[in-house]
Image (tube, rainbow over all chains, first blue to last red; front, side, top):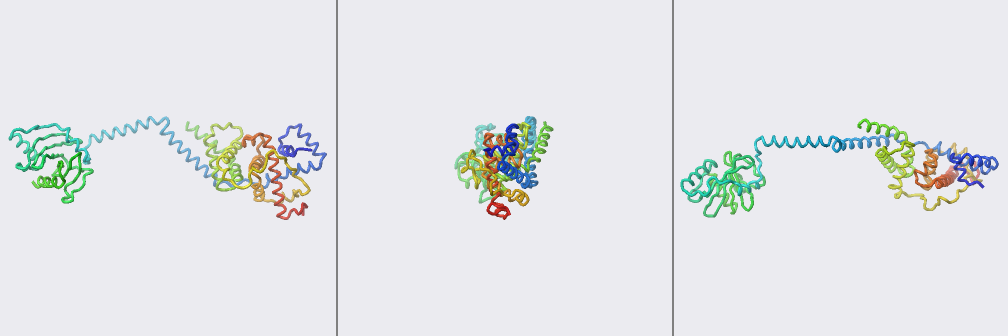
Length: 248
Length: 187
């Protein structure tokens, strides 16, 4: 008896020549084996002839598109992570440095974060530390008047000291003041600034409100200057004093 | 380098386009779902493109079909329904295909259409179907089929024989339904 598996292998041309010759002899002698072999060939022929290739043009186009996308991604990756990576990084660095240099050479920005005022409390240099004599105090008061375009009620407000400094390339003056309610500071910055983070005073829309460090702050503009009044007291009190300064 | 990449792409695309009908056809006959087959074929093409530098240059079609088959086994097989291998043993005996109720071959050859053959083929359990497809539709050798399906060559032989035997029975069912065969006697 012939193993049917061998007949299939013979139909597929997978037998050794010797074994195939032996089976051919058996095929010639046995009609049953011959019929079996023909049945195998029939199935093979049916599959080969009746099952055609599937239609796949649109699917192949989709594959090509996908390959194009992959190639594009690889090219981009190679550009940024391959041999040009250092060049691009250097170019980017140069752009950043150039932008920084250009920015430094241009006019300072009008935008100032209110928190920047905090540095005015401790880093300034005194110009008239401890105004001991009346003439020196009057001189400083006059200077304050000239610089800030404001005046002080000398009976209520005493100038205790004057300091100068710099904020983002702008000239800044700080005046330490005292009135019957306590100490306060007036900061005058040249230029009209936008004070980020400062709210708006409800009573007078010219004033801006904010907190800097432990102090409340009221800021406003006076001509080409920006003034800010700091004290550990309510906004209403600061706004009243600011109004008096502004009204002059 | 850029020319090298362009050449690689051209070479791959040229070879892949030739075998793509086989890739999609195999995927379709494995998944029995056009949508799944398109996904499977496309993923196989992408995988092959990524791995093209590792292709040994021997038989691109067999290499592609191996990728499709592996992808199918790893990703799609668990989702498939229908006849599976579980109830059948690779090593079980293969029944003779010809019998007193044999199909009138000439009639079947003349009347059967592709869709009906595909329908009969789809009823063959998966592992047997794959072996028959790779042998009779794709023309691969037993050794290539063994490499693709990762089974010994003896198993390939028995799967092909068993698969054809089952297919033959399905074709008999079709022949009876269509009236080419009544109670084992051709009309």
